[in-house]
Image 1 (tube, each protein chain N blue to C red):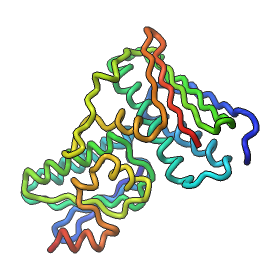
Image 2: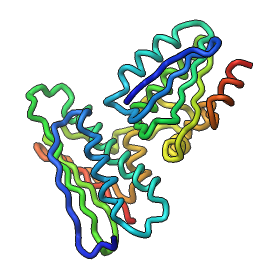
Image 3: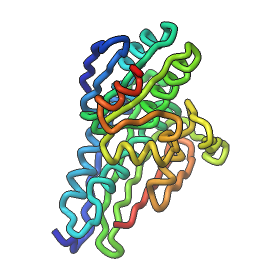
Image 4: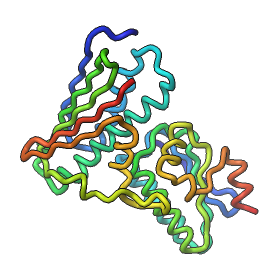
Length: 144
Length: 112
């Protein structure tokens, strides 16, 4: 399909690891509609992994220790035709953090921690995080 | 995720089908912790049917590799799908792990 208009999908998920496959499925379904992508399998996987890592950061860190049961991840996935790109926005109401304080993994030696943010930054064209009390915002963009 | 385990000679083999991620890691981590406790533990993780690997899964494999090395054992992975292999390359974990194209080649290396 050649995209003429922006196509937007919104998800509002409980902040639990068990639901993150829904986001992966949604990304695959959206990208499946696009013609002319050079390496569809790799692109889909990379988008899925980057979005998944943002979610695991939210569940594992932003909402760490929260037990109200009302923790959510509000996600907007938008396919834009001009320039053709997938933009994934994620919002949470948990604790914010400073991405600059997260150490980059030392790639010369196998690490146990620190690959999440590294993967996001390397798999997407742009990754921004805007901390705000009660409304932290991730924005991931990949040109297609 | 579905995990199957078996033993070939003295090599403990783990097959993971489906998503290997934060949500599904606990039983895999528990099994790896158990088998890598033995002296000279030899472990093979077959990812032929693994469709998705995230950073927590990578960390789980790294921890198991380090435990194996501490007991003079070895941990190999085999049969990675292309996107999964690319993530190993991106993180340079392809240098840390012995990666084989299939189980047969991995077992040859582990048993010899």
